[in-house]
Structures are given as structure tokens and as C-alpha cells.
Amino acid sequence: MKLSSKTAHILSQISTTTKLGDLRKIAKEIKKDHELALELWSTPNFLARLLAILIMDNKRISQDTVNQLDQDMLMHPPEERNQLMDWLMANQLTKDKKTIALIESWQNSVSPLQRRIFWYYQARLRWTGQIPPPNSLELLNEIEAKIAREEPEVQWVMNFLAGWIGVYEKQYRDRCIAIGEKTGLYKGDMVSKGCTPNYLPEFIAIESNKRNL
Image (cartoon, rainbow, N blue to C red; front, side, top):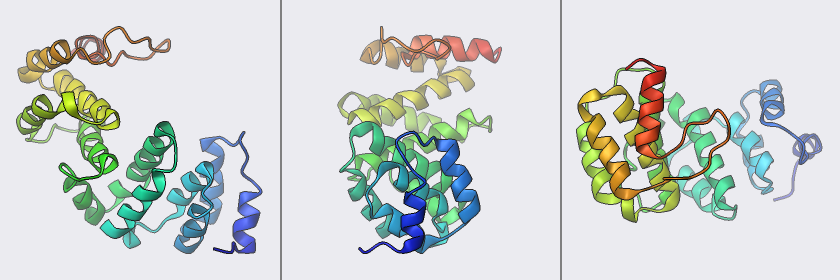
């Protein structure tokens, strides 16, 4: 795809030192421009793709659109593709009932990235302080059955969700702690100062104590 002068100008403002806050400032000036977003996405520069997501029109995002974005993300290393999909969720997919419905249909998607977003969205419903949805028991059953053999990018968010269920729903706390003890996921992993360990017994203890729960 031959890039327009507008796209070329925007790309000239992006470098390896560009921060996420800088991308948000650029997006605020552009506002919504789906065609421009598609051009930026085609580059396929990681930061340009993050910017593209910010200026997409979520009313034009369908399952076919997500499938194509998903395939394009696979060219990136794992950390980048996870960030791209999480950014898409936070900045577009959770903004419209139609795209939320898409997220809710991805529990058993063939795409690991789409499964990741299903579980991440469920965790997000809880950590944002909302009343937990009534599906925690069903989700815990699925986590116990599948987490050990899931792809790493999905495994992490399933563990993350179990952590927040354990924090906010005391009736499931012991069960969530037991999942961590049984799987041993992230036990002993080093984390940055001020960050909460991902190992479920530690995560649940720390985050529930913070909230006096």
C-alpha cells in the first residue's frame, strides 16, 4: 500500500523514543480516522500500530476485522503482540456493546490472542471495582480444567483472573489459592519493586490486604 502524505507525516513523528503518552497526544489531535488507522497499521511498525488502534472507528470493527488484526499481530514478538491485543481491548473493544459481545464469544476461540482477551476482560470487570459478575464459579471450573495446558499468553490472564476472584470473592479464595499451589505458576518469579507477584497465594494475600478484604 502506497502511504499518503498524511500518514508519512505522522510516521515522521514516531521514533523508538516515542512513549505511549506521546501516541495518545497524537491520537487526540487526529481524533477518529479509520482509513488513516488502516494505513498506519499496514506499515507494520509496532508504535504506528498502537497509534492506529487509538484512532480506529470501533463501529467498523467486526469479527473479520479482529481476525485480520490478530493474524498481523503474529509477526510481532510475544510481548508486542500481547500489548497490541490488550491495547485493542482497552481502547476499542470495550467501548461498544457489539464489540463486547465479540469478546464474550472468544472463550474457546482457536486464536490464543482472542482467548487471552476473553479472560483478560473477565479480570478487568473485577479489578475495576465493579460487582463481580455471576459467572465466577463457571470460570474457575474452566481455569482448573485448562490452565495447565494453555498457551503462555492465555495462561497468564487466566491466572490473573483467578487472582482477582480470590481477592474479591471470599467464598472462592481458598480454591483460587489452591489453583496456584497446584500449578506452581510464577512461584519464585522476581518482580519489580512495588509490583505484586503473580503467584496466586502471594497475589491474593497482598491485594486483599491492601483492600482490607
